[in-house]
Image (cartoon, rainbow, N blue to C red; front, side):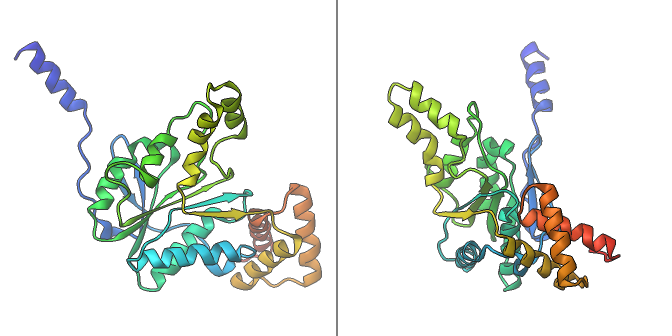
Length: 277
């Protein structure tokens, strides 16, 4: 064997095996991993019922309608859920997926991490060939000043010669409306030869989402309504006066008020009351 043949054989051993056609009948949800490429089925998705998501009615109804249209074979828009942390952005995506499946649609959800965005074209090649429809979900999507991953995503959303597969929608959540930190955009404006073009390059990514759904800090009434809904759903009995006093104290010690804080308070309350969730 020549030296060149030995090198070729070593490289072949090091190269990851291509992903075989996944069996999408195994589960309703999958997680995409790389090195090597694989789609791992999720036996049980961590989510809450869509009826327990309080104070986000407009976003809920808009995303539900968009997802239903897509699941029925009609056109749908990619969606960016942005805004205040802990207000149910990722919970809404998972809850709506479950609600649409409950209506009889074979809709799958695939979670993709931000770090794996450069591999997204390989993932889409597998989804494109599948007989079912998919929500491709990226949670907590954002980019730092030296991060070039956003360029991989731009082609998926609205560009590239192949375009986005007809059976795939992309849903992402982020605390930032334009996905980029403001100082990054400001730095581009200050240092670029053509400031306008530099800024457009950075913010054009969010423009490629057909739906922008904003999530804002909840009111105290919504915060308490969330806790009441959890109590009713899980059978936790508590007087209104006690709920109000303890929930407000919990909120004050956390220094914030959100759906996540409401759930954390409820978990503590349920444990103290001896109720398993």
